[in-house]
Each structure stands twice: as C-alpha cells, then as structure tokens.
Image (cartoon, rainbow over all chains, first blue to last red; front, side, top):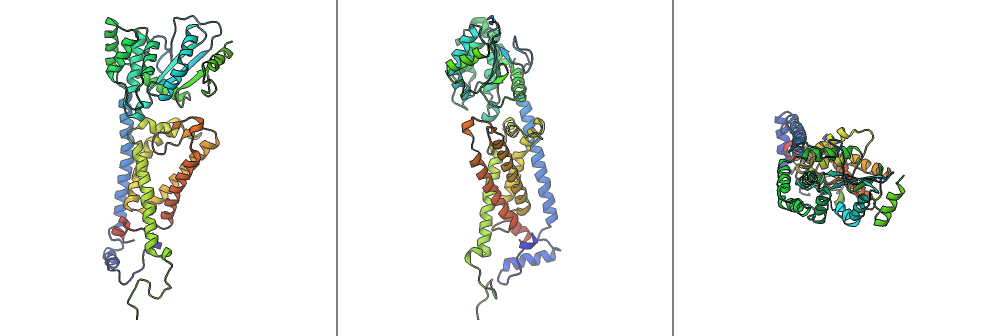
Length: 259
Length: 172
C-alpha cells in the first residue's frame, strides 16, 4: 500500500494533519497492526460462528420426530416400494422415483406420466420404489416437504401411500407457499383414510413418525448421485426425462428393460 | 505567478488520469465488488443444505462431499466479511486480493463444470445444484464473475479510493 500513499501536497490541509498525526503516533494514524488484528479476529469469529450456526440450525431441522421406517422399506435411507400387493411379472424392472413434494418439475412429471407409472405398476410390469426427498425445505425456508413426506408415510401405514401421493401432487401449492397441516389432512381423507384410521394418521403426523426417515432418504439419495428431482432410475440407470417424456416412450423404455 | 495548485511543476495529466478520477473509479470498483459479495453471501445465509449442495454439485474430484459441505457453509460468511471490508474501504487491498482470487476460483469451477458436461447452476447467489441441460448459463456466469474479478484486480493494483476507511484511519 505504501506505493500509493500520497506525497505531501501543499494545500491539502487534511492530508497534512493526517501525516502529522502519523508522525506523532510513530507511523500510523491509528495503529494499523491493532486494527488489522481486530479485523482478522472479527472475520474469523464471523466465519466460524456462521458455520457453527448454520450447522446447528441444519441439525435442528433434520431431527424432529420419530425414526420409524415405513413397511417394505429396507431401512433408513432406503426407498419405499409401492404396490407391494401386486405380483410383478417375471423380469419386471425396478423404477426408482426420486421426488420432493414441493418440486414443481415433479408435479409436471406426475401430471404427464404419473398415470402411466401407476397403471404399469398395477399390471405388475414395473416395480416402483419411491424415494421421498425434502431438500427444497432448506431452499424455500419452510418445512413443507418434510411434513408432506411424513404425512405420506403415515398414509402408507393405512395402505394409502399412492393415493396420498397423487392427491399431494394434484394439489401442489405454488412453489414456496407450502402445504398447510389442514391441506395435508385433507389429502389423507381424500385418499380414503377415514374414521379411526384418520385419527391414527393424525397421531402419526403430529408425532412426526417418519421425519427422520425422510431426512435419511434425502441424504442417502444425494450420496447415491441424485442431484435433482424428479430423477428416474430404471434398473439403476438414470432415465433422461427428455427421452421418455410421453406415456408411449416411458412404456417402451420399461418394456425394453424387462428381461 | 500561479496560485498554488496540486500539480505545481508537472505537466497537467489528462483528466482521465487524474488522481481524483482514478480514486472515483476505485470507489466504483469497491462498491461494485463489495455489494455483490454481501448480496451473494446473504442469499445463502440460513440455507445450509442448499449452500452445501451448491458446492457439492461441482463434483470436484479432490473434494470429498464432507469437505465440499464445509466450504458451502463457510463461503457465505467469507463473502459477507470481504464485501463489508470492501464497502467500507478497510484493508482494501488485502480484501481485494482475496476477493479477486475467490472470483478466479469460481470462474475455474464453473468452467470445469461446463467442460465436463455437468448441468448445474453456479449457485452464485443462492440456489445451485443440477438444472436441465438447456437451463445452464455457463457463459453468462463466467462473464459475470470475470467482471467481478476485474473490479477486484483494479483494487489490487490501485487500492487508493475515494471515501474509504483506509484513508480516514491510515491516511492513504
């Protein structure tokens, strides 16, 4: 910085004063080393404190209920196999579907191809495994994906996962608005959960029974290379949604993967 | 005969080379880079997972997911600290050096993502992660970060600016 310090210039009283002060002070108007030390310490505290704060808030966000695993899923982190009551035909491929209930592209996929996936699954021509993610909560600064995921697996307890799932996508709020508790309960009853089953659903929902499971799926799927939603994996291979964007193309791809 | 002026005895410099004009350019560079850094930092604060994923999405072979995650958590605060120093004009040159190098690293990171055929958003101002193949904005992102690097380089070369704390506190 020395190179740019100004030469004494007559007529610049302020400059002269500053330089006089510098001399009196032994070289620095205020002690530069002291200021530098303060700035560096404040900077380190800000960065380290910020990291700890973000890490803590993340930890608080990811634990908020029980750690139950829905029936059929192999454990925390594993996907949820739907249509397990259907007997798959020999050689039927597995379709892994990675979705977030708040993801607009997932809704677009569900609107376009959801019925195809469902009817093929019901015919046993494909084994569908849902991986319910919740990464959008962080970006949208709400907890709707986690709540909706928990709600969906509470519906799974009543045997209505697919119905709840379809309700939630059909009625997805605009991005960022989030689902309300009342909306999610409405999806549950529209999915056919009524009476005492709805009471059980509500208890499960309030307890956050599957919150940890949804978080574990989020983490595991990212580690497995899922970088966006919706991601479709047919027998472990990523499908390019641009290539299977119509019911016919998706049906063909599933047929081709059938051994 | 002339009344005393700042330029006694030297040929008058063209207006665009005058100290005053250069100081003003420096001020503009400082505020440009500083405001951008503060803005970029705040866009990521409070979104820990998104910040981590944004860095992890670059899929850098020498960074484990864990290390990339920690970088993602630290970056917003580093950006804010640098941005505040630049806006205030305090330790302008050191802040500008770090800021310039940071922008160069970003340009390299985005370029390698582009070259390797990844389809990600740079996550520069929040967001980030994978996007559709036709939604990438690599040229714009690189040009933008390069312009920030240029502002930083100016201050690296000539940290003296108008209205800076450096001047108030240290006289230069």
